[in-house]
Length: 395
Picture 1 (cartoon, rainbow, N blue to C red):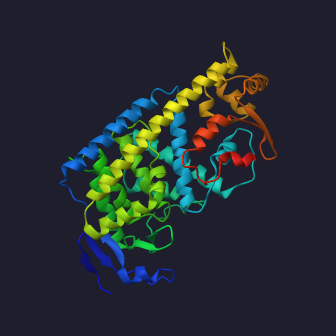
Picture 2: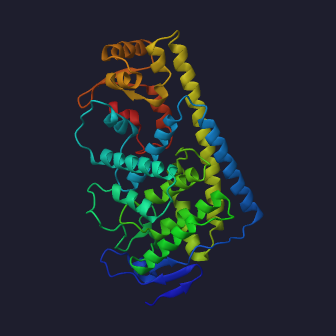
Picture 3: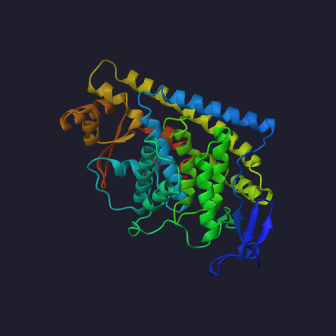
């Protein structure tokens, strides 16, 4: 099979690796044309993009109502990491991750939890770098990819993917092969980088709705491409100042509509147009912002109920006011977070138990642990990964 042109790029013969599906061998790998510098969009598309950008502004303002918006940031980052790890068959519950993060906890090594930790650390470094003024480019994203692996790659080794890879549907049916490794991949990725860096007249949501699927179809890195392509969206929104931090849980929406998402990616390949994907993406952003704003309202309501349960003043009320940010805790965490003694933390935990806000659990791996069930149930209702209830960890 020779290279052959198509509407939005060309099909390139795949390498002779033994695990490549026959359907991919017949069709070849997709090498897209350079991204356009100017895109003409229908009025309907512009309206959808405008609604999505307005929704992002409302979400950022709503997050400011929380006593500490880092609660929402932490939960969003954790869900993104959970979802991306699940794509690699590393499912882990929210509770397991929170337990492992407790000070003094010494659980047996869990590869799935360790993978989540790597995702979170890489993500936090990336956002810090972008806030400091760094470009969103291949070196930055490639470094994130390198940090995700369980074993750090050798110093000086590259980040490029060297094997044929492809997108598969839920049933394992191949959707499309990514850009073939080698010159095609590197040239296409470099053009993506220059396009991302350039000034555009496009609305911001339109820009990320082009940049994200192109990065997903290129799949340039040796590992973690799905996570990096999703993370790119939030990095771009933060770089542009539309969001102050990562509070848009893009993975929740992509997981919910994964089949349609893959169909839209394939439509880009078949038609060379990003507009259908833009409409789909803008609807998703609008939907997610509405859900996150509703979550913020529920978090505010829960915090009010917690404060009502602990009237007066003192450390118990201080801790009650922040339980929405620490649904799994122990004496050490309370002492550290509120600068009180272990004895004081123990007294506070007992008061919150009597108020019905905390339940004590003695766990062989984690010793005495306290659970704010109402907070955990609220967070676990948001498309939990894995599907089983997080609370079942203690069943």
